[in-house]
Image 1 (cartoon, helix red, strand yellow):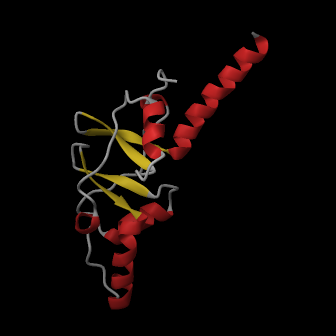
Image 2 (cartoon, rainbow, N blue to C red; image 1 turned 90 degrees about the horizontal axis):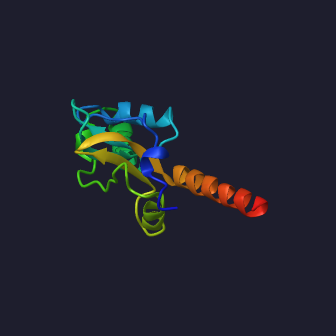
Length: 140
């Protein structure tokens, strides 16, 4: 199981956001995807923050009440972001996810975003490993 790596199961083309994007535009991206959160990147593709649907809800309520769009992603994004590297083992990440940690992690190398990995991707990796074990055990 230690040989299973994040880079082999991550989503390499996640939805991303920019700090100067309006929150309303970020909400539209969330509504058109299946991601609950996403990385905020600068012009060079470096991870600078994280925004989630939850982060947007309070802003949406306020903007709907006042019928105006004023908030940008940088106003609501979290700047402290837990991330993993491409060579992180799936097993280690699965153990981290069993606690009260995020359900989706940006995959970063030298500050640059490579993709994201979530619980579904982790389950796919472990399921594939189990299937391989069962095949070898029933034929061996």
